[in-house]
Image 1 (cartoon, rainbow, N blue to C red):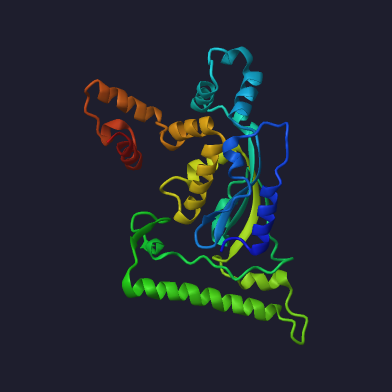
Image 2 (cartoon, rainbow, N blue to C red):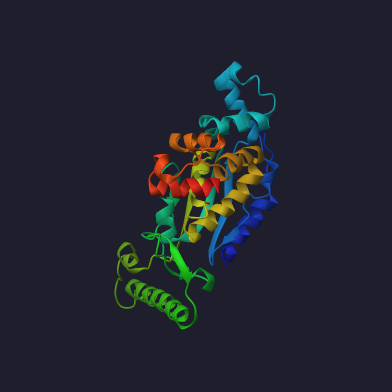
Length: 301
């Protein structure tokens, strides 16, 4: 259960008492407000607040660039122009604040995106719940033999069972010791800020994460990519589905030019031009390294 009974009661009360507002609202995002979207086994994402919509992006662009945007006669076309030409500030006019519940090791990846405001649950002040991320069988994979930070073939049979048992027993044992160190039976108990250091990286934490749309798109471009670690990718994919309802024009342009698009080097563009002329181009004649050529082939083949 990703939400406690108290959290669910708070959400129900908020949704039952809507407030009138004069600010611009996004009908798509209004449907997501306070709704908890489950992620992984105990995680969640829910929208706490947001500011702006597709129109806010266009409004900012027209103020900033004036006559330069008059040839773009509709909001969708303008947003696609802004995305296509790597403009950033108009997208910064939209912001979103999320409540995220996630494993600590995912949070350590996530926090590398330093262009957001974060306030995390304090294990110095409060006691963490006994909730751990335990991978589903289809997420248990061996180390990749070609990618030092990726996964290879799935573990199966006795080996998969052995790994799952280790994960479960180690997490449970660590939490038992955590509780014992906090115990006040006959003594003061170890300080929470010290007792927490023995907990494993798969325990769940929570935070509020506020970010503007420009930086959120950068997060999604990296973390919703098929090569991203699955445990953070599923969070990114859930956020992406919310953003698609919030700013459909902007997300459509992002999906087209960033998620579905590629950036080619000057050498790669030269190769494409030569190929269009009928010339046979090889890695040796391209001027690219083997890695660059392999990636280039992945785009054009």
